[in-house]
Image 1: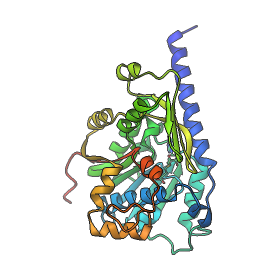
Image 2 (image 1 turned 45 degrees about the vertical axis):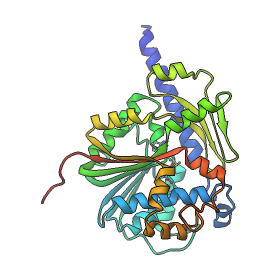
Image 3 (image 1 turned 60 degrees about the horizontal axis):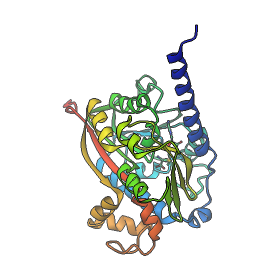
Length: 327
Ligand code: SAM
């Protein structure tokens, strides 16, 4: 029998799946770069800056021996960072099967495209799956609880529907121990909407990125309508070209609180860099990575357009309520 509501639900479900597939296919199709190709990238310094931000976060919030869950781990670009933090166990999950294959190759140490290195010192489990759809508490029942969960440059892919956003947070909440930490980076909706207001039409950008909102987007609808499924197309030279969704941070924070988290901090990445570049140990790390010149106000190696693209992101830290076991 015809059921209009059911049909609508079915269509929504199908288009959500189609967009998740588009995102997965985009990342799967990105092949590993050689060291030379990487160094020639127009956003090489932005990549290095992002690696610095992730390294700082990992160093600040991980202890020796921690069990780590890396949601949307990609090609495993953070494996070395986790190794430096001496983690005890690592689970990485990503929707893109090509990326998980690259991650596995990197973990196994054969044919590492950057450098031949010793094996990682921690055991790892790498899986392909949709972190915002699957009940990970069931899949990872034997691996939990985790001390730290990380979701780098990927949380916004959960914001296509409320159900997916909730699944994402429910998964992290169910798998972290009480007192555990959830660290991540994602686009800063305030910056994106501010730039959209200043733009002439529905698109804006510079030489390294552009963002284009769908025709049906309107500021009025944005303010009144539901805060999920606000889609735009994001293009970042030599990195990203796929649909993404606005994550209003106050909604993310409120939803996270429902799932037992408290906010430790949220900072736009410009602020993050300015604050942590005041600490000598992180200035030294920046020098080694080579994203900025000699630190402090010297951004000689990062182009103004790359620095402007860094402004599009924020870093957050959430803490799962409760006391860790005293045993
Ligand atoms: N976290 C990695 C890093 O920082 O290098 C990768 C970041 S990349 C910008 C975004 C990643 O999110 C991609 O690897 C993509 O496949 C993954 N992703 C997107 N939607 C996902 C989903 N529903 N479940 C799991 N991974 C997802």
